[in-house]
Image 1 (cartoon, rainbow, N blue to C red):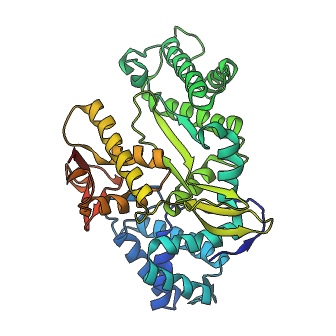
Image 2: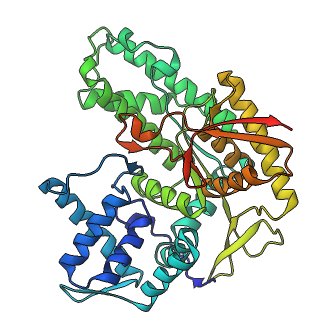
Image 3: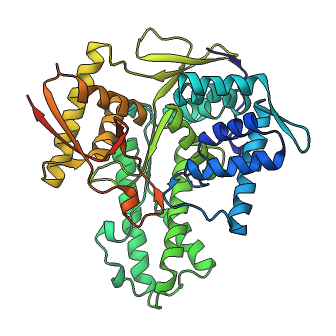
Length: 425
């Protein structure tokens, strides 16, 4: 299924929620109820059942449904989802009542008969028709900014500790500036290594220091004491400054950092691109983004599947391997084994972090996480392979004190797995 779309990027127009599951739970709620209050109540119940929040991570702790603050947040999110679903023609509102449009009924049927993947691709078409955000980010930002590395974008983040500086040693303004100078030097090396550009960041670093002094977060005199209580606030400003520099100056993204995050994490759910803060590279710390799709007039590669067609003849293709193709199957198994060896080398244990292995395989093969999970499930049940896979659970996310599920476990046979061992047969 494809549709003809106009070309007009408006990524800044969306509201601030990340998960496409919100559209599903709204449609389910409207399917059952018509009054606005009953729809909201059902939506709120499903929101908790799906562990959805406004963060880009799912929640591990349940909201207090009685709390007025919680209900205000639920109401705010509900209205955002309703507004966007109405823009896509999925629901109609007549003041105090809702009903599903034909498109909304079609979306629900797709979810129920074909699953969340097809549902998300259906939403992708509706979102592109309205905002053109994915085409813009993939084609106009990623591939133009770094064509030599398949559209890879880096957003380095280095704490003082990562740079070998003890936080307790930062006692004066001069100490903190030394950290900023080392941070700047590391950014220059990362830009050279990953983007192939030789850039001096001296002037930008001076601008950052001037901004911190201006708002009273950094003393002007080098010898003056640095207030340790302001460390986290200063660090957030430093990170935001450099993130915006990379996004706007290096990658020429014309809109806000918030809009980039929303569309990037939505694109991750569809398989348009991948974004992660957890790529296991000892030489790099921060966030990486890279496309899992291309925008072209045509392609003869069986590894690309058309999702939609734009009005100027260009098409959005998702990169997708198939377990039924022997070459794809062999490439996945080889990449899986190599990623396991790489991770095992850094930790020196038989069982290693499966999520780190997944990150490496997804990057090497340019596939989404959900396709990795599907392929690994096949590999675990395939007797003809030359490897033997052992999957276990180390510690479940809910067994920790974490509030958010920052990395979903790999689901195999309905059970979450997060450590892996591989032997050659």
